[in-house]
Length: 102
Image (cartoon, rainbow, N blue to C red; front, side):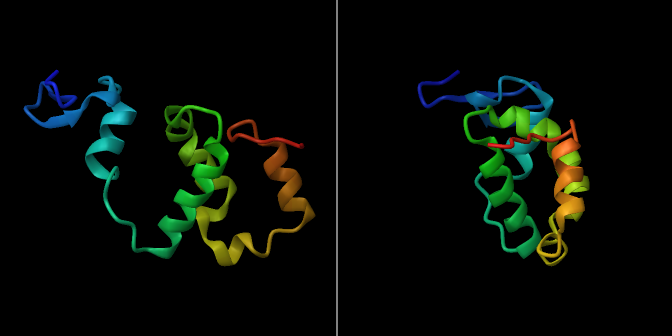
């Protein structure tokens, strides 16, 4: 690792040291991290995932992201806005996502 925290991966790509050679982190680093989001659905997803991440590692969120997408209708905010009590109960029962009744 260089003094700047940059490492060169086996594939020759320069990356920040924090990905720790974990595939989920590497994919996130290479494809998403530090890139602007202009799509409303993806922006809503990022806002929601950041909220669920509070106090947890981002790796935990990345590994559950597909479950979150399924639970929250692909983060289509127009669909999520229509969630009723049944949808909320379904999400609270979904062990594939992070949930809290606090």
